[in-house]
Length: 344
Figure (tube, rainbow, N blue to C red):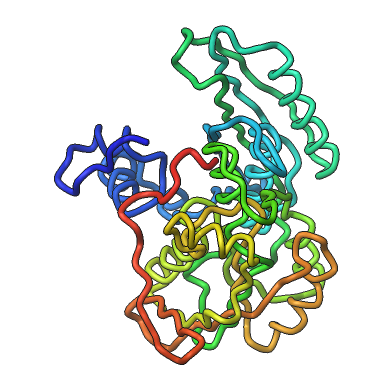
């Protein structure tokens, strides 16, 4: 792992030292990219852009995948790339339709590795009902790409009747997580470091469009959605609270964490709240819709353990308070960088 940059290090070192997430990456995005490309759609800071095209609302997103190793318990870089892009579209309230893929191949990558990844991507597309319709392939010198990097972009049709955004949060809104947290980060870490735990930990990677579309079809009023990837659940909640200028109260005892993940985090000195997920999202809905939302979500295997974990407060400071099982509260802070780089 690269040395962690100090706050006064230059932006180039910040970019090299961290793969994404944390306050340093947020500062980099704001000072380099938003400064030059600011527009109403980009400034939303959502998982994708919602655009009006001929009277239809479409969602458009892109992401890059540099996970190391390429294969890990429960998934691989190919499945991750498909699921990640589908999920970003879903968080916009859209039905994913078409994807692109760009492959950066390192010279010497075994053909069987590439075929295995391509097969995994094909199966993930079919299972989610999307098509990969265009792409690109480039080869770089040996030692320059850790085998394989993938970029995917996606387009979907927005089906949510109203805008899904942190700005839509209202005091009293219920906060729901669709399942246990931390499994993806721990699965990748165990494969990377050759760690073995008492119980096997598989990544939670999964496509999330179907449960989100079912929430919409059931008439649940969705105010905000966000998948808890880099930065984990804590990072997502902090981002939303700050963007919405609404404080959140989270009940620690309500957040599902498997014993295997809890034990692995204790061994490694990590906190599950900040560990990356690839099949988990936070949903903000009116309190009156919370039970209906939970019933809809629990029909799906990826959301069988959906829980109500907190609520939005009538407080404009944008803070996230975690209340422990014994009733003690503490403020959650955004980490300066990722706990586990190269997780996705």
